[in-house]
Length: 235
Image (cartoon, rainbow, N blue to C red):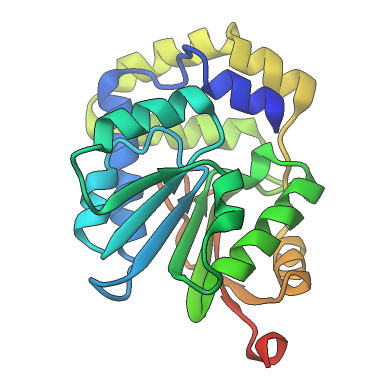
């Protein structure tokens, strides 16, 4: 995961335009809010990235923790959300110091593909410790083994056409093909999981899980899973 952390901590061009970037974060925030069960809920966004629309999520819950491994991104989050008393920024290491069973909802969106299987197992163990018995873990944007990059391209172009940045998206695809992102993806790769593999991984970590009907974000070729701590594991 370290090379991906370094990439996202650098100046990169993963988004086709400012409109693409803003819509991306707005859509993710909307989908996360849909999983918040109470206005008093404590929510953790695990490896949140820039989280530009986090204030909207914070408005829908009692407290929002933004946990981010990249130090540069984390610094920007602290500066951006310092006035918001509902938002707290943490490193992933800080999560080990948080109180056990103190979080109602954890969202890990578009993260699993950048982790090794062992890193993902470790993150599930940390999250399991933090979640309340009735809490939920939402693992979103999981890449499927049978779905290749062309489906991702199609999903992006459809999203762009619907939202008025198709030209920028086409130019962005050309730029991405020649970018450090493409080179890093080719060298390091991205982890892909079948539905059964993710459910099995979550079960080994103490969760009962199922696939959600819709993925978080615009790309419905990817998968989202909703997991709860197994009652049998907590007795």
